[in-house]
Amino acid sequence: MTSPETSKTSKTKVAIIGSGNIGTDLMIKILRLSDTLEVGAMVGIDPSSDGLARAARLKVPTTHEGVDGLIAMEHFDDIEIVFDATSAKAHIANAHKLGPYGKKLIDLTPAAIGPFVVPPVNLDDQLDAGVGNVNMVTCGGQATIPMVAAVSAVTDVHYAEIVASIASKSAGPGTRANIDEFTETTSHAIESVGGAARGKAIIILNPAEPPLIMRDTVLCLTGDVDEDAVRASVKEMAERVAQYVPGYHLKQEVQFAPVAEDEPVHTLVPDGAGPVTTRISVFLEVEGAAHYLPAYAGNLDIMTSAALRVAESFAEAQR
Image (tube, rainbow, N blue to C red):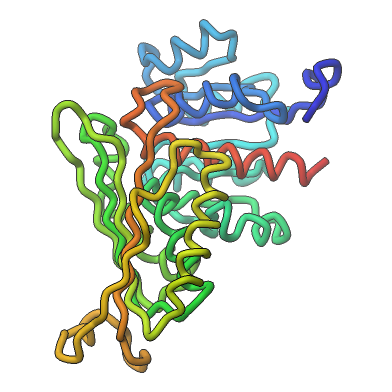
């Protein structure tokens, strides 16, 4: 941990693009929790947004002129890491503008310009690769891909399907605009990061009142498995995620069920897959830390917590 005497001079300066729910929660997390990072700018396009107003009250430099305003800031050269918490479409334009300046970009949208990173699964690989733009997948991906990877560490996963159920109240305009990108990006990451031969993602915006906290279901189709080994792998992975997302936990024990020979699972698994004999189900719950939004917004909490973990790791690796 950085000592109080040196923290102010040794912290890595970061900028946050997007003054909505995710960007504001991330700003507050960094201010409250990080001994490594300093918020050098909060960037938005709506001068009346609550995020920019809060940043100003917290003495964080702000601009409502988007990325152009960020680049024009006099201390822009001091910023090393830029978080993008806007939308998939906006990130493409933002990354293009920021490209010539050599900043490390952490993308919290489903744009997926850069490689996916899920901290407990492949963060070390991205640190070693020195990639300039990394993608945080989606909230559902951050919650469920570690579980797919945990099963994949024990046995081949021929098919993995995740269902992320979040409170409708926690889904802002950016989330709603990115629903299609959510399913596509998460599905790809289930395969490329989680290790499944084929992946599928579904998101549900639950309108229940009072709002329910984030719940996720992970279904994996495999061959014969060592059930104890799978349970141990899933439990260990859940503990690793909970290190930076305290509200993350297994809802119940991992469930195993046989797949009957006449079940049409061939429509789900890719050609050449081995025999499918076992259905594995993992049930998760993610309660938010309520740094900015209520505790039911665990979907935001896991994204911002994962992004913070990645940024701090990058900052420490550069020292």
